[in-house]
Image (cartoon, rainbow, N blue to C red; front, top):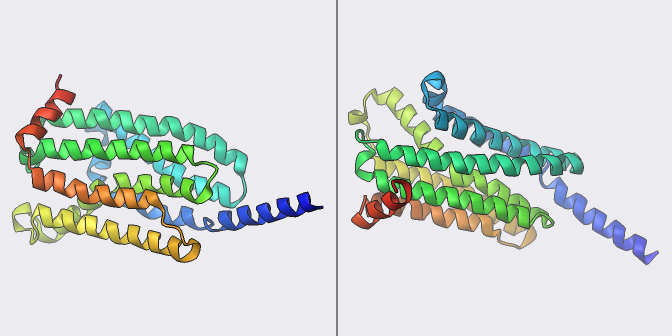
Length: 254
């Protein structure tokens, strides 16, 4: 009888935890469409893009789709389907990481445009971002039995890779209005600060919302928030310092 009560109690806890994610798949559609719109130039020039761009773009989109489907499955208590898709997702995440490294390596050949003066700093920040993405996936796998922590690590992968898409979308909107980069009212550094600032507001909202209900601060969101700010410092603070250039060349040009 006591054993039955314990099972019932645990079952109720699990159900309540699962119910918190009943609408998560709908919210995750937002970053998915932001990414599609932010990289619209890639999609419009799909046939002209090199192979490593396709590997990265398609694997990243597949990862987004998996993130959208997974909370939907768990909220419908389709645990078996959730686990099977999760196993497939590990391989997709690996493809995202490997293809991203190839893209970063390819950026070493950029010798014109606004990114030239900060291409090594940008590459360092992108490398750091992908290491953070991979760590979040592995931490999510490790914490699979802790529903909230597992979900937070997996959802945080969105925030690791979203800034390039959001800043590109902001730039495209401004270009539609002002027609030329020279006419833009905001320099790139301010545009990136606003981009990260908006990201931090969303992350802080998630942290506060969970803390208010569960009295627990979710570390995955704190980690990605910290490194989002560090990303700005690396790109615009270091500005291709000699040691940054030497470090990146040793990794990608050796």
